[in-house]
Amino acid sequence: MEHAPKAIDVTNDVEMRTFNFFTMGIDGHPLGLHLDMAIPTILNNADEEQQKDWLPKAANREFIATYAQTEMGHGTNLKKLETTATYDPKTQEFVLNSPTITSTKWWPGNLGKSSNYAVVMAQLYTQGKCHGAHPFFVQLRDLNTHKPLKGITVGDIGPKFGMNTVDNGFLQFDHVRTPRRSMFMKHAKVLPDGRYVPPVHDKLNYSAMVFIRAAIVSGMAYHLLVTSTIAVRYSAIRRQGEITPGAGEVKVLDYQTQQHRIFPQLARGLAFRLSGQYIMKLYTQTMDDIRNGDISAVPDLHALSCGLKAVTTHHAALGLEQCRMACGGHGYSQASGFPLHYSVAVGACTYEGENMVMLLQTARHLMKIAKAIRAGQSPKSNKIVDYLFHKGPPKCLIDQAYDTNYRNVLESFEHLARRQTLEVYDKLVQLQQQGRNYEQAWNDCAVELCKATRAHVRTFLARTFVEEIDKISDLSIKSVLQDLLQLYLYYEVTECATGLLEDGFMTGQQHKYAKKKIYEALEKIRPNAVSIVDSFDFQDRELHSVLGRRDGNVYENLLKWAQSSPLNKTDVLPFHHKYLGKMMEEARQRSKI
Ligand SMILES: CCCCCCCC/C=C\CCCCCCCCCCC/C=C/C(=O)SCCNC(=O)CCNC(=O)[C@H](O)C(C)(C)COP(=O)(O)OP(=O)(O)OC[C@H]1O[C@@H](n2cnc3c(N)ncnc32)[C@H](O)[C@@H]1OP(=O)(O)O
Ligand SMILES: Cc1cc2nc3c(=O)[nH]c(=O)nc-3n(C[C@H](O)[C@H](O)[C@H](O)COP(=O)(O)OP(=O)(O)OC[C@H]3O[C@@H](n4cnc5c(N)ncnc54)[C@H](O)[C@@H]3O)c2cc1C
Image (cartoon, rainbow, N blue to C red; front, top):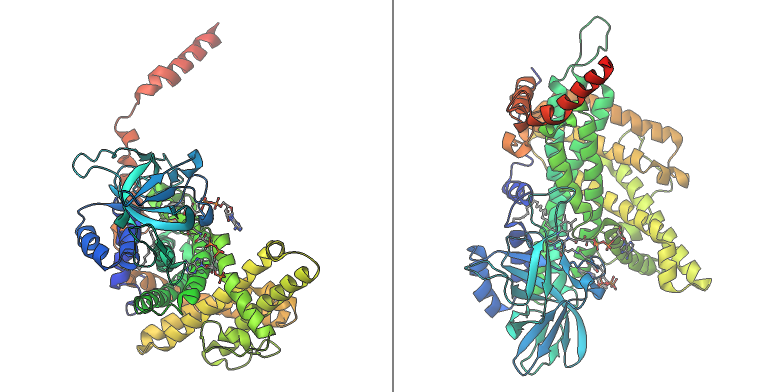
């Protein structure tokens, strides 16, 4: 029986339970976009009167709304969205139109068959001028018959890589009229006579995307912790091969390679959860500030949410695949749950802002800071980026005898982020001095810009993990989490080793030291591994996995699962005699000739 120390209550909180509702619900939940994007849009973009009208009905589920922004021809470049909303002052209505095939709204979740309302992002035209993409709250289907309203063509976009129980849909408008007040009017407005009133910040209409980007960080934590649970539990019952000849087959979890494959995903899951809580708090605080007229935190929130979303989704996608591969053949079965979790999780690398584009958004923010640093300005007491202004130690100190609170490791991450940020900034300047325009220079530095963002986000994730573990008072829990923290930090050191070795900051000896600390951490985590994942208290139904069952009865239940397949309802299927049986009979006849 695996060692069972005290449970660790890391993810057993309401939010993660809520997340499960969202995420597992996303795979087939008709209210997914209603809850995740339509309601946040109403909360942050509807004025008081609109909120009074729409919010109670939305919360009461008197209708189902989606978030229809992406079009067949454009997802990233919102400036080029083609759906138009043209104001008609005579009737005080907007006319929504899909002028081209590529303007067809394409991808919105639950649009195909479930939703009867949508937040529609459209280019706003009034008094002959285009004011860019703005959100409108539009009814799509009759509330009683659920039939599409006049001028609206809507349907499902067909099977996808995953999430095939979500009716992602398409939507076309043929000069559909909607009242002036269907435009979200908290930030920008169009007056009855057609005059446009601009918002205090032209990106406040994008807040629903920011909410999801922030929420996705915890979402990725959830996916990593779920799949690590499956992989750890299965690896603790699966026996295969011997370590000591003649001593009997070992649990595959005793192989160092198995630990090196799974435990870092566990550690990253915790790291992402802690940063996920931070960014969600920053989102909530920023939305409150905006309500009070203070938009100062908007750029920080945008930059951090884009970077965290891109990094955590990427690592979650890789980590889930590692957990699957660690479970051998049964990991490839639908019975494992991995296909479901993976196909839901990896969608987040694309939706809510494709990862490359998100990394580059954060890089825009970093380049502004680099410019200020090169201009000799001092930091503006912003804990997320202040370290970039500081001069860290000239050499890596991770192998010093005492590294209180991993200060030396954090300074290594800070060094890499600082160097990468400033070097790519200097290259940007140099290319422009050589005659390239800014946009071309930017594109020629894009890969290095993405690296700067990754290094910056790594620093944030690591610092947050260290700070949050330091706050834990229960020493038995703290010691277990410190093992995971040690693994996380030194694993990240090896992951960015090229950057640390490139300028001689870290030595090969120190890289070897980092690896030693990883192997040490793996050994310390091994006896607690099953208890750590059990402490997450995921229900078997959440895991969707025969391999990850809490009772560990994999083999009996794997056979039961297989036998329940429709294919096994009868011993001989009709197709046999119709095709294979006939083919073999004919072959036998031919061989007798
Ligand atoms: C009950 C509540 C319980 C709590 C719930 C939490 C539970 C906790 C646990 C976990 C929850 C997990 C949930 C997981 C989620 C599952 C559900 C998922 C459903 C979602 C399905 C998918 C939906 C979609 O995909 S919606 C469509 C998404 N599309 C995009 O993201 C488009 C990407 N493109 C853009 O955003 C923009 O085009 C751009 C940013 C790339 C470029 O902007 P643009 O204006 O076009 O041009 P640019 O010149 O680059 O920018 C100009 C300046 O504006 C700044 N800026 C841009 N965007 C923003 C912004 N959003 N905010 C602030 N500032 C912005 C930019 O930095 C530029 O500034 P600068 O100063 O000039 O640099
Ligand atoms: C599962 C799922 C659910 C979705 N749900 C919704 C929804 O509910 N509502 C909604 O409105 N949308 C939704 N989407 C659409 C999603 O938001 C878009 O797919 C996403 O924004 C990317 O846009 P795109 O698909 O047009 O790709 P593109 O923007 O065409 O990008 C294609 C490729 O080009 C690269 N690229 C594009 N622009 C740049 C650039 N400036 N610099 C560098 N590289 C660039 C990208 O990195 C990407 O690799 C969903 C998508 C998926 C997969």
